[in-house]
Amino acid sequence: WYYFKSGGYMTANEWIWDKESWFYLKSDGKIAEKEWVYDSHSQAWYYFKSGGYMTANEWIWDKESWFYL
Image (cartoon, rainbow, N blue to C red; front, top):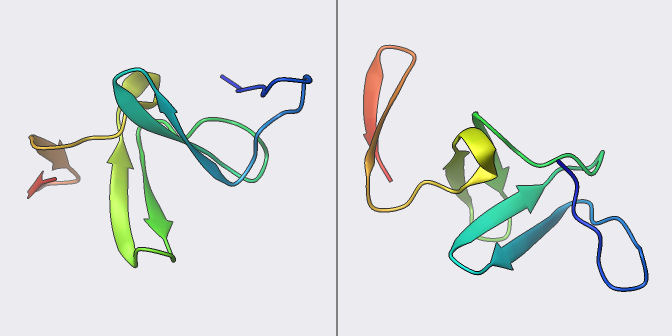
């Protein structure tokens, strides 16, 4: 899905906090979903689950390995 700010502007390359979780909108404006995203500002990798929710304080299984995020 996409996220539009007030004024109707589509968000891209930006983090969004929406009530209970972080989301990341990629360069094409699509939400990161079921994928890893590298944030150069924090120099860290983040995983986004189905629905675009950022994984936090939980284990995930990805490509034959467990990760705690």
